[in-house]
Length: 393
Image (cartoon, rainbow, N blue to C red; front, side, top):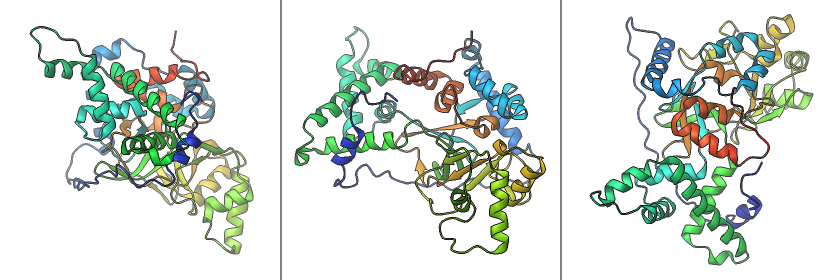
């Protein structure tokens, strides 16, 4: 994965081992709106209506680009689940929206993050550095004020992205050249190292939000970090009982054996760095599984129901790849520092497997969003030599 053009991430990590915490985000939790009783549309209907409304507002743009942003991904989905493929083909959508349960959080590239922080007027060093560099690029045009020109140019996402990318990469390479003297690091150096390290550790992650408060996902799992394709005894025990489980009762031993029988083929993902010693999270799209709970009304995305899922697979009612297992999770992911892009999406976008996708899920989701986010996908795709664009003919 050609991400840092030769810059060693291990070096960056070494530089920050002794740093003090920087850029701690201010957490302003907003109370969730109370659900109003009455005979209104269902939550699912509201989600679909919102997607249709946004689609109509962007109708002209939508007419100029295909809704099928990843044809080879669609072919793979069809081989995995005909039902989910049909749902995807008849209504795959995604758009930027407030953080919500059942929605996604997509990790922003560092240059995009700095661009958005600059637009927000962030006072930390690197957003201000991008602002200063942009002001130097703006030409003087008679009859147009400097402020007006800045407002216009700062809306050019790709120009600002490339400007921020050049600034940060030059600075990181300079840091690498003088890395032996850690005492020489300035606060600006430490800020950049933390920003870069945070971005690298969650590079192009796409997370499913399982619980949220305001603009914070209090629990989320990463959809696009495959961990294992089958279960062995140790992994099955971890997923079912967590690491704290010491002995196994007859019932637990039976469940363990049945899980190995059911998930000879499996989709296990690294959900995130928190809760690694806890039982895994099972996510699926079946409302009839005993013990399963819908993560939010109208999402038709469910978690849990492990025992019933195992028996359903053994009985032939479900397939192993109808389910996703997650080891670990993320906690308290926030959009306040522009590091995460909150996205609402159609159910099959969140439920489909991420196993050997020809086009990575991060690119697929951002291209479904369209606009500047689709442009970000394109420019990030150009940096990679291992992935080709998947435009339909």
